[in-house]
Length: 300
Image (cartoon, helix red, strand yellow):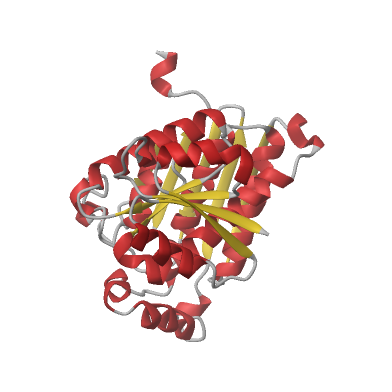
């Protein structure tokens, strides 16, 4: 049984989020009215994930993330963001939160987001092997557009990172989220050419169109090439799709708090927040992401 601790000073929002999550019979929900009460409950409740509001009395969402990262690094925290909390949300993501969901989109993407974060966290929390002796890992994967197989690849690479003991557990989780976003962008927006604007207007039609295009030419025949390098210095992921690409200069700044509530650019925000370097090729169909074991500034 998975336990999710929902932290929000609004009884209405707690009930709304809890109702959405308890639709999964394998999940149970506990509640806290603010960050201070949540921290006091951790040793008793032992949650698998914390879902928290940001603006709260006593201990706010940012302070909760900071404390959990320091004292419970294996425990993922997902943010619920709303109007007026954009700046603190960006800071909380930088401090260690695993993902975020706008409150305006709870009914459409909350369950999906929690499922993804739990899946990634569970993989690296459960599997410890003798592969810590591996000094480097380098490989290329050629994947289709099946999201289940793409998520399986993320889980596989999370296991390798854990086995090699590369990066902190918190950074491994965040790199998994970043890779997942890059792969889904390559599939949905790159190979299948499904516009993110459709997701803003019709969430169900967005995924239905993607499903249809997996069975149509040329979309369904396109693949994603993923080059992976992992060693004691960190990791490097290169994700390239076979779509027409886009102009990387046209991307709005996803780190601007004004853009936080927009579904468009959510993946880019997570990628750029969690990785040390995110670069696109001129055609816009290849992204390179790098994460160092030691920040570059610390070596200078």
